Amino acid sequence: MSIEKVALRKEIKAAVKALSEEQKRKRSERVLASLERNKYFRSAQSVLMFWSLPDEVMTHDFVEKWSAEKRILLPVVVGDKLEVRRYEGKERLRLGSFDIQEPVGELVTDYDTIDLVVVPGVGFDVEGHRLGRGKGYYDRLLPQLKARRIGICFPEQFVPKVPSDPWDVNVKEIIID
Image (tube, rainbow, N blue to C red; front, side):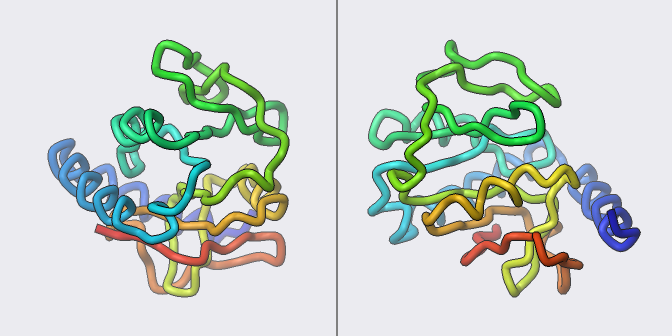
């Protein structure tokens, strides 16, 4: 893991931690409203989202809302990879790896049925480079998906340059508050 990435993660996490819960909530609402207007989201039937952590755009209510109209999928950590499972309501979540709520719903293995992937990240840059948490889960999953990749983040997570390695997978678009 590069020293540059470690330092940038620390810097971004500190900036996000300085935000109040109210700031994060309002900014999350604006980001997700922009996502709802996005043509790729509007046309998608099957969307791979993420169940947010405290330092990410707050997706819980969004996932719940859209699961009534679209097939919403969430990742599940299994060993060193991510599985994709259908979201079937908050009551069908369990605490998984890294204290992340994960679905116990239907396992999805036909990745070609996924229309859109909304990708979390510690940071993003203008070229679509993504700074993850350093475990490489998304860098292993994303190359298997043909779906369009959209990153969502707070302004504090959008930086001039994210150091990248050959195995890092970019997003095609970034929605920022």
